[in-house]
Image (cartoon, rainbow, N blue to C red):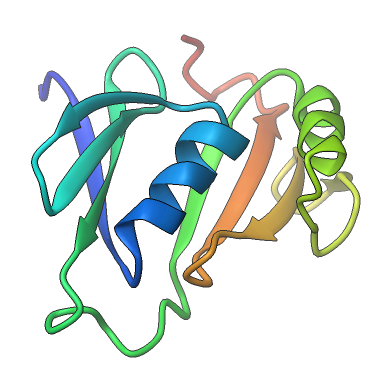
Length: 124
């Protein structure tokens, strides 16, 4: 089995995106590689932001980065107080047995704040 996981995404402005993920979402910066910065999501999950305009896809459509939590409402309220806009308030999705809400980062990546209700989902 793997030890850790990092998802890398391309961003238009590394400073703007770093401020959003570090300042607004409160993620810890664990490694600054110059053109890429890696933020800690959980004990073994990480998100890397890379300033690579020549390689960046023209659209982040179809990509969803999901953050799993037991406190969707608390995170939603915290981010609302920081001026973050959401697609809709948190709601229950009966089909997937989850509670969630969506927002976009500065580059248009769709972020989902989600709680699983399915007892089959691995617990941290």
